[in-house]
Image 1 (tube, rainbow, N blue to C red):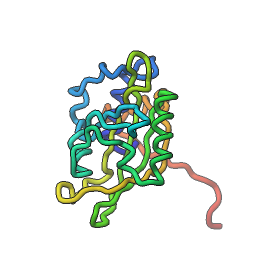
Image 2 (spheres, rainbow, N blue to C red; image 1 turned 120 degrees about the horizontal axis):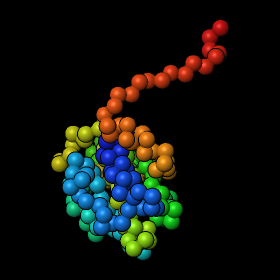
Image 3 (cartoon, rainbow, N blue to C red; image 1 turned 90 degrees about the horizontal axis):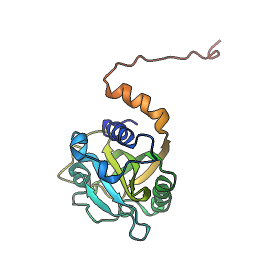
Length: 191
């Protein structure tokens, strides 16, 4: 995960989840993730309507120049991406696992924008087929925000998140510990 919003949301989700597959949707306290709320959204798991937004943070809405509540999540993506993304949403719900993915978009003027998407399941009475929480964060602050908007997004690389492995990295980063670069030397190269 490259974005602080993704790491913070994942760390909070993991802590709320505990030993369960996913935290209950009622356990998510917006005040606990207030620093990243602008990038956060909640989706309804509904294949028929394209997984509509139940709510979307102000920065997510600003990227598209409109309020996204009740809009189809899948409709934000280009035609080629919708089917794979629908499968990805189903995997998140079916396997109660999170995913992080790269995404790209362009404004009406053709300005490119790289984004990071994270999707995490939420349970409702034990079922993970009700809601999802996620974040959509630009990798660099868009200078055009407020004057332009993104068109259809395309999906890039996708990685499934294993909470057992990710928690250690998330905790270390969240704690503000410094990281030392580790270099590996491979034999070979110029003679």
